[in-house]
Image (cartoon, rainbow, N blue to C red; front, side, top):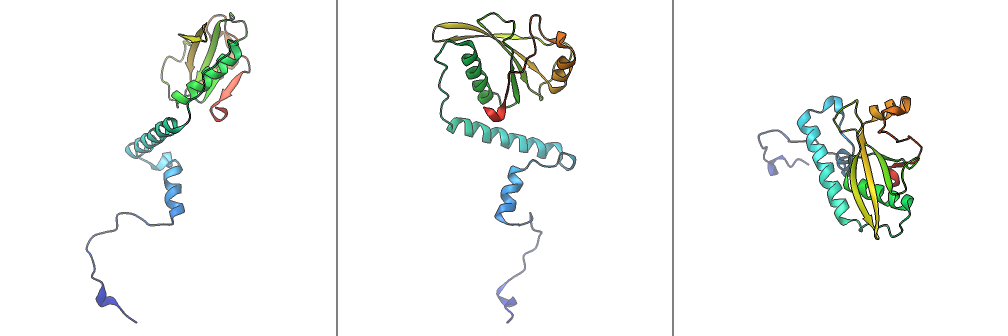
Amino acid sequence: MQHQEEFEPIEGTLGGVFGSGKDDVKRHLVPPDLEQTDDELWCEYLDKIDVDSRLRRRNSPAMAAATSGNRDDVAAWSAMKHFNTDRAVREIWYLPQGSPPNDLRFLELDDPLTGSESNIEAIDFGLQIEGAAFRRLMADITSEQLEEIKKNPNRLPSGWFLDSNVLERRGA
């Protein structure tokens, strides 16, 4: 049974390829292939991730403040809070070894960071928790800088020691 007379052809081309709903979801969740994606499309993808990330943070329950004055508890709380505010940070290394009791020393692995490859400098961000004052010292580093630090710990700020207190984003 032919029903061609019921349809009229429309000039032009189809703007996209249709697939299953599962394919459409996958297309929006899987990063595009870097080798086959131009800069504009890649930036659009990153912008979408940023918008979705902000929406997710806005809709997530507020993180309770650290209530004890215990340095390690405050450091863990501070690191998790920072993971929630800076989506570029992949790992945070908490370095208490050899530090004064009120210092929270962090190395933040932040690969999009561009900066001096030779100097690793910590910035002091004061922190008050339940009347206890802490110096929150943060140094942003790249993966390459971390590998260099592992080979030569002298690249760390004076008095800092690399130990194994690593917090990863997935654990945040």
